[in-house]
Length: 169
Image (cartoon, rainbow, N blue to C red; front, side, top):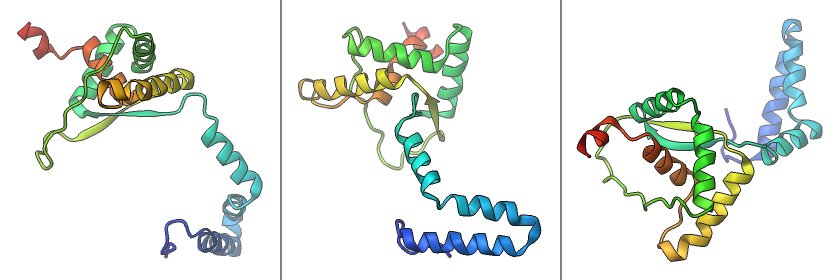
């Protein structure tokens, strides 16, 4: 049974120790016991924390529909690009002032529609951080804060418009 409180460290530590001991009783799972026990060591925890905070290119999930995600991936591939490279291009354009996203609208709660899937990109952390800072700097002027995810998505949609959008122009 997991601990009642989400961050009850001591209770979790006790459960992990119990799991390791149970695994050690069975000689065929002794290596698993060592792996489980290692997750409690200061070395492992320090390495995990360091990795979490020092990732060169952290994941940036961009909300999308399945259809939109597939279309954007195909369009980028056909153009000889990747969505990560395009997101970095979006951040550069945003920071240098050649691209400013519009405030995204919200659909009414419960309107449903196509299932949501993230577009996952791993842009350079420096570009991501610059776009985030620029969005905060523009917040008062725009009346809303453009986030890196919004910047990237709107740039991708502009760069690779849906076929229906082309037909209407």
